[in-house]
Length: 374
Length: 158
Image (cartoon, rainbow over all chains, first blue to last red):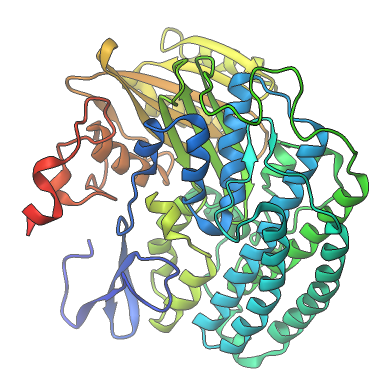
């Protein structure tokens, strides 16, 4: 155990506040010289009790709460929550609303990857990359803002539809932003693959094999970087993903470099998805007609039942398990976040690496502590 | 193998242990399971039916039935079927075997279920609170009869 310190060993605490950490968690590392012998993750520094809060909020109020699970993936969190209620109450989402949701969720995936990648590069000393990615991300945030009216906590999805239709000229804005973003992503890729120091710190570091990754239960880019094409959008398609043409981006190396490469490829793929959506999107209503649940239904009773709905978050598999007892509030909501198993997998990954590689490995997982603690 | 064949295979392998099984759709199965044999069933699921991915594990409290349900949602990397297993425990003394030897990532899920519901996991390698402070152990905040935390606010703790 990590508490027993042998001769010439020491314990070092990284966090809860540390430049490496995107949110507060503490990594207790036992070192012998500069080599990590053992480590332990302490979570709970920003435990918000969201699962308990949701039990005392009506279904509509819950939408604003689930935004706060992780602000980088607010729209996919909403999708998982709203999808649960739609399955329980058997609400059909009109096709146009489904396309709008896909567009917004893919936009939010791109901005999450941009921030995650830029932050990661700055963790390992490539600070100018953060400035590059944050510049492109800002354009994307303006595009998202023009639809949802908010930058990070959107409260945009509703049961059976979305809050608003796309604004005038949205397709042109997207086209303009994507033109710049495509060039920028090519530049990032070139910078990453030619920078000698960056490669020295990432290639062959923190390698996960496919079997180990499956065994410890990681999902999302860390899993796809090992060559397992596990993506909820393909395996269990929700919304209109089955009508769209996209591929699941994988790498085979499984190291830190491959994880960043998967995120770069996924951003290209997301842009391709959004362009298809804008081409294929039909005209029509954004709310179902002739149901009891409409745009303005602050109190709605959902039939009793249990459902598990999962979506593909920027970081992996996001699932909500909802138990309804027929009242206007959920009886129990379990939030299964993608980072929870990923963060748990840090101690075995860090065993035996040099101290300086901790930042490189832990940062590459794109952890969001806010979502682990909930 | 589709969902129907899977649940048939499971029920014939463990007669009497799996009950109330229902196939909700092509990719969703719901079944109840006797708490004492959860680990054996998970072992069988992982090795024979390639259910290698534990999505989550958590509790649900039912005070009027005096029961706590521990729910396992188990998926797979090979096929899209998702299996929901329910183990029903008594609310007075909830105890269940740990599945950490089978699914490594159950470790944190079980620690969290322990601190929030008071479900004791036998043979768990490291049963400590995960997200809550040590002082809150024994309050079981996600149970339905939890009345808040009035006497242990930050002011009183200092």
